[in-house]
Structure formats: C-alpha cells, structure tokens
Amino acid sequence: MGIVGGLVPSPLHLIALAQVALGRWPRAIGIILGPPLIIDGALLAATLFFYSYIPHGIAHYVAYVGGVTLLSLASYALLQMRSKSQEELAASTPLTLASVTAASLAELSAPGTWIYWMTVAGPILAEGRVVGYWHVVPFFAGGLIGYYGAAVLSVWLLAWGASLHRHFRRYLFLAANILLLVLGISYLIRAAGIRL
Image 1 (tube, rainbow, N blue to C red):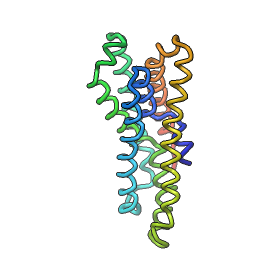
Image 2: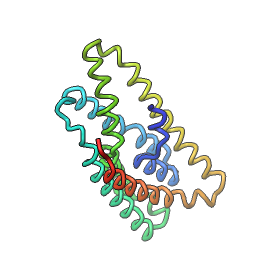
Image 3: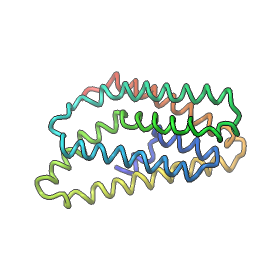
C-alpha cells in the first residue's frame, strides 16, 4: 500500500521534481521526506485520539480545498516561470518555500489521504488499541518504508529519464507545474463525485 502511494504523483513529488530540474537534489529529498512525515504524524495522532469524532465524509469537503490550493499553486508557478529565466527560478527561494507549504496543504487536503486514514489506518489503530500497538507497528513501518522508498525512486527515475535527453530536462520544470494543474483539477473532479 505504501509503495503505491509513493509512486502516485502528489503535489510534493512534483515540487521535488521541479527542484531536481533546478539541480537541487538535497532539497528535493527533503521535500519528499519532511512534509509527509509531519503530515502523517499529525494524522496519526488525530486518528489515534479522535477517530470516533472525525466525520467520515470529511474527504469530500477537504478535496475541494486541495483542488483549489493546487490550482492556485500551479497557476502562480506558471506565471512566475513566464517572467523568469531558469537561473532566476533557481535563485528564487521564497517561491520554493511557498510551493512546499502550499503543496503540503494540498497533500493534507487530498481525498486519498483522508480516505486512507479513515477507512484503513483508523480501524487498524482501533485494533491496536485492543490487542496492543506493537501488533500494528509492522503495518505502519512497512507502509512508511514502501512510501518513501517508492517516492524517492519515482523522482529519481523521472530525473534520470530527463537527463538522457537534454531537451526533456529543459521542460521538466514546466511539466511538473502543468501536472500540478492536472492534479488540482482531478481533486475537484473526485470531490464532486466522492460519496462515503
């Protein structure tokens, strides 16, 4: 389950891919690992302590927030890209920090995140409360290892593929931001159709 999550493009994957296009591998790895750990830690605590109080239809509503956030992030990045060269974009740290924050919020408001925590992780944590939390640790540890391993591997493979052809590398930043737009639209479409 974690491997699939790590391979599916997320806003943070696309921001990391844009950082790779700008030659910032350490920052890309930090983006792939840091914010998801914080998000998952917060959702783990919320699910552990408040699972019975969280409305099960919440994914429907937060998906709208995620879609709008992604559309705003991608539009802003594409507008900035039109007015700056790749060198100016590489020197633009406020855009990167804002992008990571917005992508993290979009990740938090992704419908899949809430569906996972409400329908899969919540019942497993409830089982852990009964039989002992050490019983469910392997599930969560395996999910984390699979997710982060697959996330780093997928970004590396995309960057490696782009490095094979210099022409592709030049358009990697543009492609990542266009994919953010598509992902935002897909969040809105799924939000309109989600019925839990």
